[in-house]
Image (cartoon, rainbow, N blue to C red; front, side):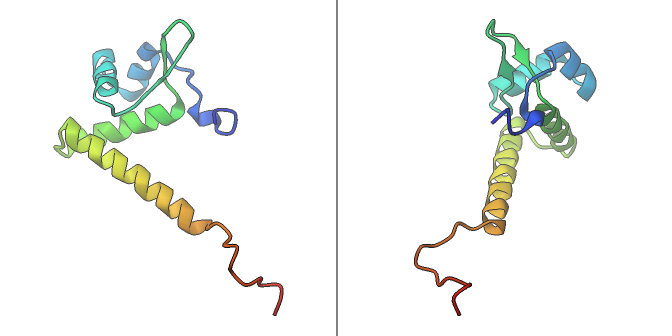
Length: 105
Protein backbone atom coordinates (compact mmCIF):
# COMPACT_ATOMS: atom_id res chain seq x y z
CA UNK A 1 0.00 0.00 0.00
CA UNK A 2 2.93 2.31 0.58
CA UNK A 3 3.68 2.34 -3.15
CA UNK A 4 0.13 3.56 -3.82
CA UNK A 5 0.08 6.19 -1.08
CA UNK A 6 3.35 8.06 -0.55
CA UNK A 7 1.84 9.81 2.51
CA UNK A 8 1.80 6.42 4.26
CA UNK A 9 5.55 5.91 3.90
CA UNK A 10 7.41 6.35 7.18
CA UNK A 11 10.17 8.89 6.73
CA UNK A 12 10.42 10.87 10.00
CA UNK A 13 12.39 9.73 13.02
CA UNK A 14 10.59 10.09 16.34
CA UNK A 15 12.55 13.22 17.26
CA UNK A 16 11.59 14.95 14.01
CA UNK A 17 7.95 13.82 14.20
CA UNK A 18 7.68 15.03 17.80
CA UNK A 19 9.09 18.42 16.86
CA UNK A 20 6.82 18.76 13.81
CA UNK A 21 3.67 18.15 15.87
CA UNK A 22 4.83 19.94 19.02
CA UNK A 23 4.73 16.90 21.30
CA UNK A 24 7.26 15.08 23.39
CA UNK A 25 8.81 11.85 22.17
CA UNK A 26 7.46 10.02 25.22
CA UNK A 27 3.94 11.06 24.22
CA UNK A 28 4.41 9.52 20.77
CA UNK A 29 5.60 6.28 22.38
CA UNK A 30 2.61 6.32 24.74
CA UNK A 31 0.14 6.86 21.89
CA UNK A 32 1.66 3.89 20.09
CA UNK A 33 1.41 1.72 23.23
CA UNK A 34 -2.24 2.73 23.63
CA UNK A 35 -2.99 1.78 20.02
CA UNK A 36 -3.69 5.28 18.73
CA UNK A 37 -1.23 4.96 15.87
CA UNK A 38 1.25 2.46 14.50
CA UNK A 39 4.35 4.01 12.95
CA UNK A 40 6.40 2.05 10.49
CA UNK A 41 9.63 0.41 11.55
CA UNK A 42 12.99 0.00 9.90
CA UNK A 43 14.56 -3.44 9.73
CA UNK A 44 16.46 -2.44 12.86
CA UNK A 45 13.24 -1.58 14.70
CA UNK A 46 13.52 2.23 14.61
CA UNK A 47 10.18 4.02 14.42
CA UNK A 48 9.48 5.94 11.22
CA UNK A 49 6.48 8.29 11.15
CA UNK A 50 4.63 9.07 7.92
CA UNK A 51 2.73 12.17 6.88
CA UNK A 52 -0.46 10.25 7.70
CA UNK A 53 0.90 9.58 11.20
CA UNK A 54 1.53 13.32 11.64
CA UNK A 55 -2.09 14.04 10.66
CA UNK A 56 -3.23 11.49 13.27
CA UNK A 57 -0.99 13.09 15.90
CA UNK A 58 -2.49 16.51 15.16
CA UNK A 59 -5.97 14.98 15.51
CA UNK A 60 -4.96 13.41 18.84
CA UNK A 61 -3.81 16.84 20.04
CA UNK A 62 -7.16 18.38 19.01
CA UNK A 63 -9.12 15.70 20.86
CA UNK A 64 -6.95 16.06 23.98
CA UNK A 65 -7.62 19.78 23.92
CA UNK A 66 -11.35 19.03 23.84
CA UNK A 67 -10.94 17.03 27.03
CA UNK A 68 -11.06 13.45 25.76
CA UNK A 69 -8.93 10.81 27.44
CA UNK A 70 -6.84 8.32 25.46
CA UNK A 71 -9.54 5.64 25.51
CA UNK A 72 -12.05 8.11 24.11
CA UNK A 73 -9.57 9.24 21.48
CA UNK A 74 -9.00 5.63 20.39
CA UNK A 75 -12.76 5.22 19.91
CA UNK A 76 -13.10 8.52 18.01
CA UNK A 77 -10.22 7.63 15.68
CA UNK A 78 -11.70 4.17 15.03
CA UNK A 79 -15.14 5.65 14.30
CA UNK A 80 -13.68 8.29 12.01
CA UNK A 81 -11.81 5.59 10.07
CA UNK A 82 -14.93 3.45 9.83
CA UNK A 83 -16.96 6.46 8.68
CA UNK A 84 -14.36 7.31 6.01
CA UNK A 85 -14.32 3.69 4.78
CA UNK A 86 -18.13 3.56 4.57
CA UNK A 87 -18.27 6.85 2.67
CA UNK A 88 -15.72 5.49 0.18
CA UNK A 89 -17.71 2.30 -0.18
CA UNK A 90 -20.93 4.25 -0.81
CA UNK A 91 -19.23 6.48 -3.36
CA UNK A 92 -17.86 3.45 -5.25
CA UNK A 93 -20.29 0.55 -4.78
CA UNK A 94 -19.20 -2.80 -6.22
CA UNK A 95 -21.04 -3.96 -9.33
CA UNK A 96 -23.77 -6.47 -8.56
CA UNK A 97 -23.85 -9.46 -10.89
CA UNK A 98 -27.67 -9.55 -10.82
CA UNK A 99 -28.10 -5.83 -11.57
CA UNK A 100 -29.46 -4.92 -15.01
CA UNK A 101 -26.89 -3.64 -17.49
CA UNK A 102 -27.49 0.13 -17.89
CA UNK A 103 -26.28 -0.11 -21.50
CA UNK A 104 -29.07 -2.52 -22.39
CA UNK A 105 -32.36 -0.67 -22.35
